[in-house]
Image (cartoon, rainbow, N blue to C red; front, side, top):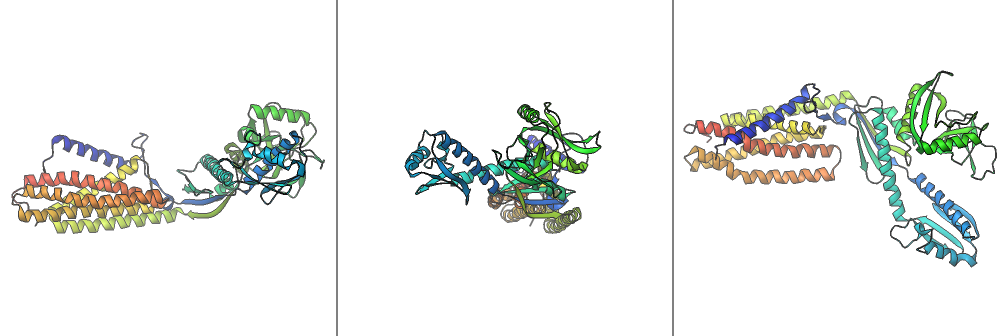
Length: 517
């Protein structure tokens, strides 16, 4: 019936007032945790940068092959099996075995109990596929290993990217997986997109290695260039220390030389290794290598056993700050390439807001005029409900601190149309009932009841579409589906609780003279 109990009236009023209060918090500043909640503006509304990063897994695959080559060499030497020409070629490991030992080596690789078990090519989780042609063994990364590398690299890269972005202090960043080798980074309100691009583009792989003149060193050598110069040095491939052993890194001013440096602190294992290396390497140059380039190569004057040190390299304070940030956040597992980027200026974002608000106001105005002239006092009730519905929608989005995008505004505008559509269905149904029923209270109540099925069916089908958009879509599409979904529930609540309650008050008080025909 159109009669509402005092309890229902109280509950509907409290819920409505609560969400109106929450919605109003967007327009006031407060330190209260509830009142301070806000709707966040998306990238297209407040400006910022959009970056699509692609992970280059080739260096990771090469590193895995190199590590496996060392394992195989040690394994075969331990078994006293003669081998020749152990090499990496065409993304595979090759080595030659004398014909007399082929079956013996094959059995080692295929033996379930063998220490070389990770390369066994009949297990589901095998890392390598083994093939033998004459006396040449070939190991290639399996499909399982390739998938594992991609998944692991992406998970690690997302975590490192998130740390770097958080260190910069970007407001409400959005960092998401895209496929199995891409990362989407949205940075609303970013003032310096070039800096973040520079930070995300660096792998930040830090190593400490000795400079050497001995080309026949056991671990091998390589020639590396100095950062920002044409000088180069021969560096041992033996890694004394890596960035994994760093606990902290901070930019500082060296009081003695008056230059900006990066001071670092090592963990217990790193401090022990660093102390041992500097104790035995007094008089040698220790190259500090970042992403394949030498940052500096100081001469070791004394053993450093404190577990801390400094990196110098003609840094500005900004570059030292960025290097410290990179070292604190950790090295990326693989290089990241920026394959797509977009920058939205704050002016363009404000233009989008203005256009969205203007469209919403025009839609509201036309709907209000139509409903009032079509249904008079009941049109006025529908219009009041429409405003309340909008506040309910904004209040819920505010409570969950949702991110509003331009498609999200489109979802709000669509909600307005859906709310009006529900009221039109109800009023037209009431008109039909009023022709058959002389009692206005019964006619209005029957109109609400009999129109419920059509309204629910329409909203449920729209809800299904919104849910599909949410799970299948991305970014702005999800924003549209969220506002549309919330709008569906607020529409049903406002129509069948608020509008029905207000209509009931009016009809009961004016049951003799009310007329909708």
